[in-house]
Amino acid sequence: MDVFKAVQKRRSIRAYLPDPVPKDTLARILEAGRLAPSARNLQPWHFIVVRDPEKRRELSAGRFAKFLTQSPVVIVGCGNMRASPKWCIVDTTIALENMVLVATGEGIGTCWIGSFDEGQVKSLLKIPEDFRVVAMLTVGYPRENLELTRKAIQFVRPRKKIGEIVSAEEFGSPFL
Image 1 (cartoon, rainbow, N blue to C red):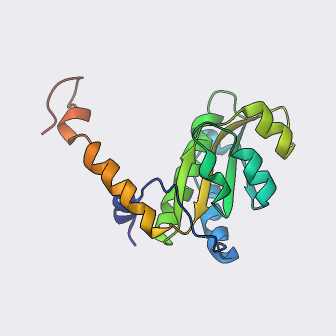
Image 2: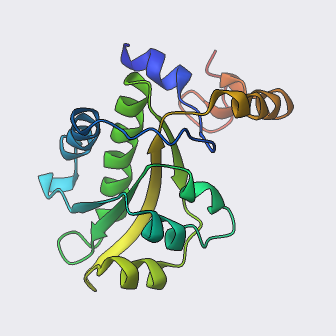
């Protein structure tokens, strides 16, 4: 699948099959994060792959994160504040998005999770003080029958038109 097709196809998946993600597929997803660009090439990220059901249950404590228990894999993206205090959050976010797009190309669903208690996650996963928990990604095969919910949400909340979000030369000047 080409990159633009992956961008078009990518959706936040909140219902997963229990099937494990093959190691080689997961390795490609993680490699996409490793290859991401970063300020001054500092690569200020660390990713924790969580498969343990009990740990995933504990990570699902956030208000909008209950479905983490269904996902066979959760990737916790951490940014090293000491290595890159100004850019580690942005750089880690870029790396995570690379993972999302490669996962989509592999037929794997993901969902970006920002609903968590950072202190609880850091304690559970023994994350050093210098690191911030940037986001978590659920990773797994989508459960198709619940994808109808996603389609209903898209109908209710469609994407904005390009003219609403892009200007030419200065804010508010039409691009097209």
